[in-house]
Length: 258
Image 1 (tube, rainbow, N blue to C red):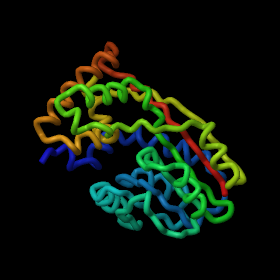
Image 2: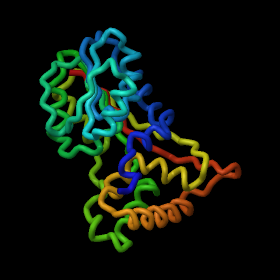
Image 3: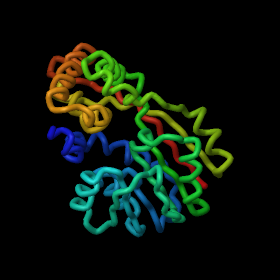
Image 4: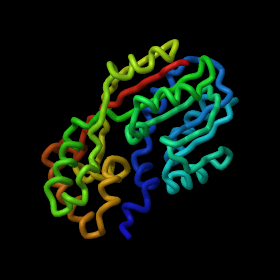
């Protein structure tokens, strides 16, 4: 078994500071109203839940994620909270929640035209849905990932795996505004300084965008795929003089108040 596939939680937290920074930026935009019940959907290894709980010490906080590995890491990190393995697409908890927090997860869940209204319906009046999603499908790292998947001996196996569906602020705002008293949408581009050149960029995406591709490959294919992807990344992201790569990473933020 390929170890890359078995250690997603460990891989994800290799860049924990960079991945957690948008959590604080998103929480800072949530209106300062009392929060009694909050849930972190797509909580990963608990890094976002930890920040959420610290900001709202009086709230009952729980988390869910579809990855058993991530939930195991979250339980180890924060044993005082309830964490469950669950699929957001079929999650049926009624709430009502004062805050539903979704950091870097809803880009993996389909049918946003019904998903977002369903999440809003789980909020108490005045409650907030806070969402952050990577908005980087047009960045070289993703374009090269799609090209690598389509051009190798694994092309048939990986056909259709790439994530291409995306919407902008002008799609989410009119979807949510009739259901909400307030909708705040913005986009930010982070520039993550990654020591280690192209290898660091590949390590970053092993914890996110590469996951659905590597899950379908055997060990030999995985090694060859990553080598080809790494060579392409090295051309697109030349290292600075000190070996650091600046990885541009646009993200879309939404805070919607019921």
